[in-house]
Length: 443
Image (tube, one colour):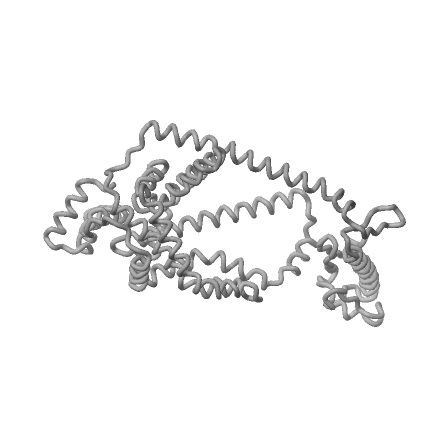
């Protein structure tokens, strides 16, 4: 809520016919902060009192006009949101196997190394989440600002709003989980009531329970109106999204999916912000005050949240452990096709098809190929004091014919490092990539 002094000044200047831009510049020169000025301008809006929520088509038209007017700002910020997704979409088109092979050659996969990699992976996830939160807050701020900021200014404001978003997001998550503990229905109500909290945190500078209860007040009596417009918007989006979604089955479908839809991403964001804006303008209940009773009630749900999370994780662990325990018995009971190793009586496979046994047979051939190739590589090294650049250089002196992968017809993955080499073979049955070198040989 802006100060009374600020809103009185804005109202008096507007009464004299001064433009919002001029008021904005004067307040900034007087020492007011950018976000305070924008909130004051939005609070003292000249817009007429809103008594009803515009229809979906009217909201879409307004969203489109706003997008056209501020295309560069909105588009750039949404590109920043989608950048991580585009990055991960392109990853499958890079061949990381030589790097992985070289890494495994230099570093053995010790428990300490596995822990370090896991920590780095978790850190990457946390940093990505923080980054997306900052950019999302910047987008919401850019929608609400009377005088549109630059991208850098929006990101700076978004960064300042991030801690409040984190705090409120954690609180609402705990309350949701607590609602699920109490037979799900409370959680559904909370998801309807608190849907507007990100907008309120960023544009109204509220956080925690105050932001959640403000969202609840705006949604009171408007839940069906809100979600009906959201459903209609989703139906109108089908002709645009479905053809692109179908491309995901193609070779570059996931990349095309992001690139083709990128110019359209700001439209839904603006549409839902407009829903929030009009619901806020429709609210006539005065300032939202958090009472002690409300703190106790929602605090109770928040305390139930961790209990619900622990119960959910425990149930999932118990379920999967039972499934994995029963799989061997199920396979033996339902399988008419069982192959047994004559040497030790071990059951190789039995799932009603000879294919599993064939997979193991192909893996046995791959293992034999690995032994043959390693013997030839060692013989080549004794004669040349280095390993060959390619496996083809072994034939016909050290090996009659070069071995190939049986299912693809491609040569095995091989890299030479002068005094060492890396030979990697993907074993089909266990989906296990095994890499060998001069020190690591086939058992």
